[in-house]
Amino acid sequence: MNLRNRFRPMGRFLKHFAVWGLLLTPIVLYVHTFGPEVSRNHQRWAEMGSAMSGIYGPLLALMAFAVLAYQSMLQQQTTKHMFDQAHIQAANGDIAFYLGKLDSICSKQDPAGVTVAYRLIDEFGFPPGTDMRDPTALAAAKRFHRDYPQIFTAWMAYQSILSGLQSVDESAYKVTLSSAKQKAIVTLSLGVCMALDQGVWCWCEGRLFGPYLFGQVPS
Image (cartoon, rainbow, N blue to C red; front, side, top):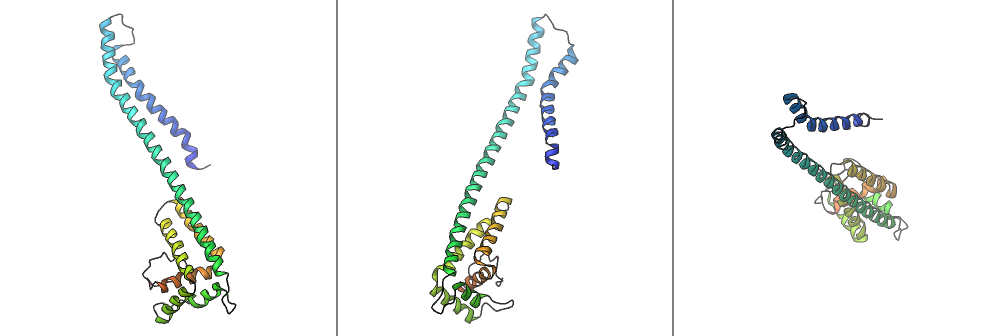
């Protein structure tokens, strides 16, 4: 049991105590000032009613405003939660679609009997320190895109989803982002993901800002 759950009953008790204390304080002060005797004088009753209405009118109006403000806050939180869940669900669906498409293409073999995934790693699995601005690497990326035009475009679509998730600093989006990265590694392998990052960077010559969460690309 964490500290928040442990102190939650005490917090509710303090809130109730504060509300009832606020409501009963004017009566206690009135009785303390004028005595507890019940008067038979109509004038005294009128004076007491005027005093109580003057005190409780603004107080009850303030409490009603606080309740409305609290309800509005809850409604905003509910609306935001529903929007976030819908956005995350749509992102997961798109991620599954693009990774499935990439996996299908990467599993194919070229005329030489080499899989597309192997060719990706062979051409764009650059070791650290490689100059990715080299004309040879840029030409290889353009040639690869000509042969398999769907691969880089599908990976760029996947990157755009990651960018949207990365832009929101909330736990639900962070968890979805981490899950999306793990799904890509499990579906395609880490080597293919790194090669796709680096191949896309070479193909667009660094004009696409990513995010490149797998490969090592020039800053």
